[in-house]
Length: 212
Image 1: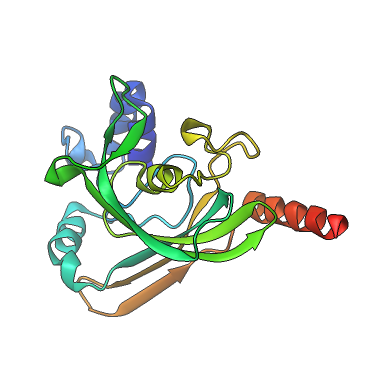
Image 2 (image 1 turned 180 degrees about the horizontal axis):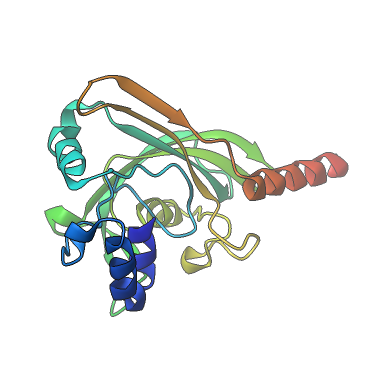
């Protein structure tokens, strides 16, 4: 969580580092301790599960053994329009023009820009699709960019054409499954759909029922 705030508010980085060093003095001058174990779309205003290592050794162990850990993270997205039943999106994601925030999908690019997403439409409610997404890679804004690139931006994602029906993008990390890097125990975590997304769907369903 400290790293997430530091990323969003770089001007507070120094103060937060000093504060954090009060609990771990040996890290006061360490610039490399802000480490997510899970780097797949730890995005501001995305709800759900985030995996954070307790220390750098655990994060490093997780990263080095990750291909063998049967790692899977699944997101639920509410998208505009009727998304195809299932599919895969592959391409390259990088910054758009001179923007330091907005990304876009391209047909070619560097290996480090390659992005791959699998998706399945779970249900359609009115003009909204409930979509299960699995980011195979972990590029910045990957799911948001990919879904917008096929004409179905995420509800509330005003940056990529999703409008303002919600005060944030309707994207939720609901399932995280992986093998523990030390014990090899298989762990599966679930986070229920948050109230804002659930309430939004309920309103759409109610409106659809009234129309029929």
